[in-house]
Length: 349
Image (cartoon, rainbow, N blue to C red; front, side, top):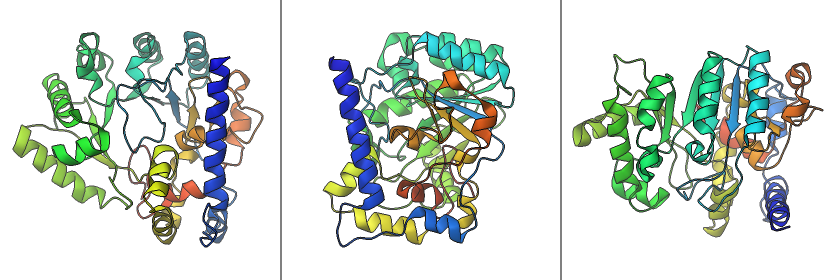
């Protein structure tokens, strides 16, 4: 009963956030509906292109509680993908080779007790695997200390959040001690070959702005990060991905509580870029939740907006229905279409 009540509470919270985004909690603030912008750009309804990324959230449990987290992840979250659902994902991947990339996320995906088994089974299917690692998990417990070697063995691309290249800004966004642990974790990854130019082992970092503003140029920030991390710690990485904070979950709460919601939404709307809208990640990605439901993207997943077609769960998977669906859009989509655009792989323009 407690589990059911928790699920109902989270669903109610998601519905409340949708109401805020779509209808506005502020009587004097009347933002332009995102659909109108797509119509002006001749992109509505937004439809999939070639779908080649299978993104799977294997659990919301995390060893961190980050202020910007759109998943609302943390140590208290109990939602974990079970092995039965994982096997359903593997069956889909086996039957559909068009999914060339498998993107594992969370929470901290490594905290799922079947994480290593799942990675090994995906590797047998010869897919490119991405793991969204928060870095500090590598230092959280001895059972995670060998993860860099495990990643190396399976040629996994590691994508990790590092809000900034100094301690103060990182710890303010992600918690005390996170920066030092992150630096130590990058050293562990560098030691086995990750992040070096001559290596095929990719280590990419993710930057999210700490306040109510859009990220700066990805190219310029990458240059700054590389110079600072090398000069101060002799660390290397491959690319920096700049991701715009979307107004959902903890970040939406912060925007409202700090009085920044209207100003931030104005920034997103005024920065709308048709070229970014044409290349949003929901056009080539399917997002799978920890309990097997299907979504256009990770953000729609957090708002409980399942696919607008009969294939709403992995047990109902039909690639034709999924390929021919209309993508669900809302005000939060302005975050992915502002400026150079934003996706799980950084800028899209």
